[in-house]
Image (cartoon, rainbow, N blue to C red):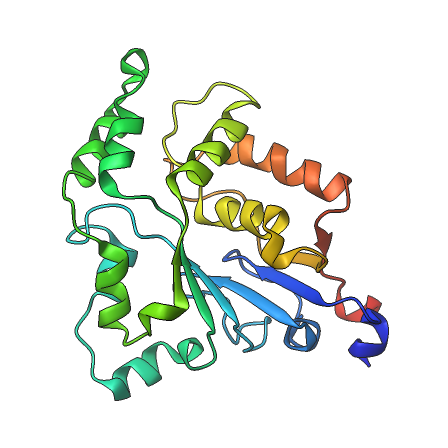
Length: 233
């Protein structure tokens, strides 16, 4: 049914972490590529099970950052399969954060804008651990199936968001970084890109209002297409 709707053009759906009010499982699982984030909060909750690509955060202090701590827990293969079932189908993981030293340099680059939040993030990235590699080893995921996005890409997204207005916030969200990569990478050129599960709120260190302006621009330009509800599928 859904293949007939899609036609010949390959489809990709980006599934965010905001709650989904309608069951979109059939549509999402029928897409050629399904993108999810971190611990996949909507997995099997109105969004099906298919998971081809994960975008993951690898910035912050692993000893105090909840998501990083979750992925660095010591687990047996059986616990990994039980607690992280989406990994069994994941073909590629993208880590969105550049090295911690780059983040420290970035956050120190505008001394006139130092806020308590920025000071805290400088401290949280005071280490020089490769948290992404630690996560891969912890979750038993092949290193050759992981990609670390470049500092230049990160900086370009950061500057694009700031182009919508001043913010005292710190870092682009994992979701916004993923959207930018999917829309502008040759790797996914030609895909029809659908999106759902984005509420534009959460950790106060992200510039949610400014990110929403960029998000809405892509919706208006039809570069991102809302996933149709079950009654329209």
